Image 1 (tube, protein in one colour):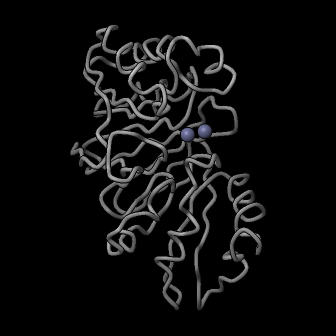
Image 2 (cartoon, rainbow, N blue to C red):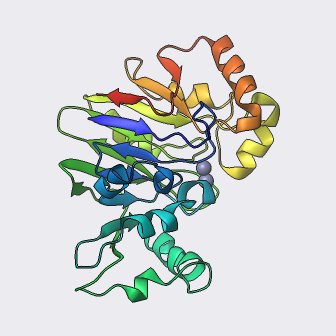
Length: 253
Ligand SMILES: [Zn+2]
Ligand SMILES: [Zn+2]
């Protein structure tokens, strides 16, 4: 399985403003930056877009992406998300004001998008991958995703504070190779992290302890203005198998 966290800064750097992972070229997890890929062939290769929740850093370029890849005809991109997220996208983004109503404009013969409702704990099979949504603990309803190609499984908890269901689910996966786990805030902002449903460098190690040591924990979603502070605090903890994500690097599992 090949996984890339797309860069979201110009020029490319390790500063992460937006969230989009691309898995095996055809599946995207969140649409923060998929619409910003300069290589339009890469955008066109993405056929299934999973949205974990509606926060802007996870949907920022969705409308641009759908416009970029649209071709007249029945073949179109699939959006997969919880029912509330799909309904929010329709009412608050594709509403004929912020952006054209791609939901209403889509017909069986000519479609901008099609939608699939994700149910917690019900796996879907897309692009040869089994993808299981598991609720996590964020400020709004959010689905973490477990992606499994039969040989390797990788967890994408998305935005979350301390949580349980996901780790229970992962405990049953002996071939779990990695988790792209958020660490949004430094220890000094632990109250803000708790209020907004994020991890900080105090709670991050407690979540890491719920995963097997051999699993790579790849740190994502550091709030940019605190990124160096978070990195220094995590380094001081000397946690096993914890590394900072490299945007634009292709991980293979
Ligand atoms: Zn969020
Ligand atoms: Zn976020």
